[in-house]
Image 1: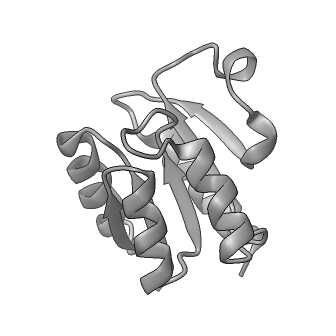
Image 2: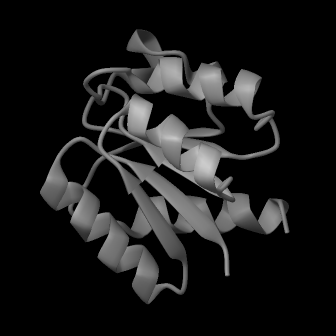
Length: 121
């Protein structure tokens, strides 16, 4: 069973992602911020990380960079899942394999997750 680390500061969004990905057959770990993400990674290295870009305490870009350095996660795909539709201009898309704009339809996020996990089987 593949493990997804979801980093999402909005509790209800995190619970929605957890429920939807569990229905798809994944194990899901939730973190509310970058610091919790690093703690979760320390417990178990996920197969993929889906993260909001703006999280409190330690933002996701910092968490991505720390996880890649500290835990040698360069092989672990990362999806930035953000509400900002101008993410390409505002953030560092080079730090992740994909950037997806949040939507009530999780189809794009699920499809990209499945695609990226398929490349790393």
